[in-house]
Length: 281
Image 1 (tube, rainbow, N blue to C red):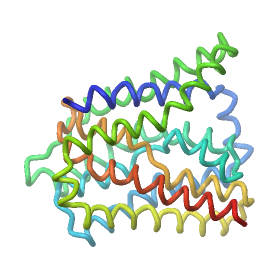
Image 2: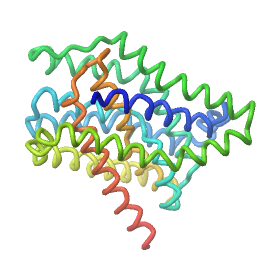
Image 3: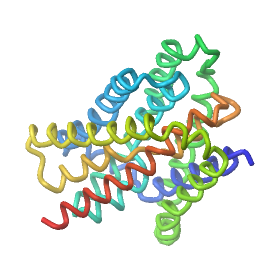
């Protein structure tokens, strides 16, 4: 079974659901709440890829896993971050706009970062990046479903609310189905590399959320905003990373998706522990 035919519908549904919760007016919040938004975007779009780069070198990852780690690090925030922010007592409205902004901005940053990463470590082992195909796939699977969701929100707001209730509950189970299928197909490779890649991925999550928390404190975000920033930086859109890695039009390399699979598992463990800790206080 080719997992791409599972991940593409899941990714499209997740982005469509994000659009159902957005209005164009929401983007005006960027100017009313610049600091928490700026901190989260810097953490997610700048710090996370830089930390991934340093860890990939430090752990001496193979080119396939090196590129896979950079890929998950430069993807946008995951749709489940809104649920985690709510559970942690964070700023849910801030979480929604951050997920939307990162999803739009990464349409432009992913091709740039991945082109660089592929040239540095990939071309020597035959890994190339068709940038045009990457841009087309991201526009089709990321931007278009969001715009359709926003349109439905405006035209049929009540229906949009009902659809969102269903899709938001399905998001996490669908991602777990994808991870399970992927694990069954590649369990030997995953188990053989679980030590090095798993520790590297976990270190990426821990360092990233620690840095984002410190940066958030530095600019004196509120406790609710700080929780949301930590969750947004730590929770990445693993479905998009898997779609890019395994797509026959881009990398066509399912092993490259293993860092994203491990990241998806560990980010939920780490952030659930984080939510439990902040709720216990």
